[in-house]
Length: 314
Image 1 (tube, helix red, strand yellow):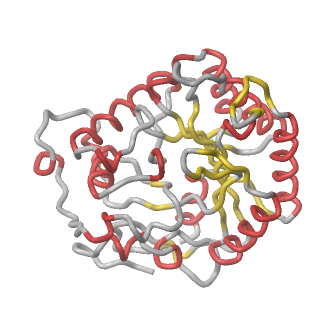
Image 2: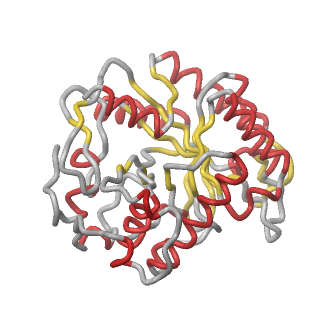
């Protein structure tokens, strides 16, 4: 559905999936945060996006190694010739040359999509607008410097964001936000937004080279289910049957689904502690999940491809 031009509440933009999440079925149109237009989306295909978070996140305070798990998942998608969206924690990207080479391999095969998952894995909703802008700006610069590509997707750490996040994204030309489906408690929904968001008026800082990319629309394409889920800082596996049920439900409702995976799910956990050993059963489970999705005539996709399909059908 189309949104009002200038002073729509964010609650109306992205509060509920059926109001604002881009839809690829034949009964709902695709809409954007702050947009005054809509795209009628195709319904001949059903899309599933695999969102691989926390790449790379092998920080010193961890007592376990995530690099092998990250490589194992990326290898799996390359071997299966399937698309994967990588949520990159920018400050850690150059810590592992093996991860960089694997990402480049997936990019060269047109299988991987790059997304920003913060400069560090910190809560954006706790930062000022200037801080958020700087972290996103630094992350964009670093990712583009290393891979020669500028991400158009932001996946906020902890799925947490606010009005300042949206303003920073608009200034930097980041067109897709992927948080989580249930966002009713986000305080940003109670704030007003206007179309008059010229960079100089909103943030008191020097002109930066990305200001000319300012955009008017941000699409929210949220995580709808997960291969795993965090509860009280602990990671729990979601049963495959439940994942498939949620995929089917979201495909039926929106024409697509977004699944999040964390590398911690792929390493063995003994007595509540992660080890440095890959759990081959989990690799097999992810592979089986991919095959079941494909057997249901669903296509693995990316955020950018999803929007392209929607806009090209208009």
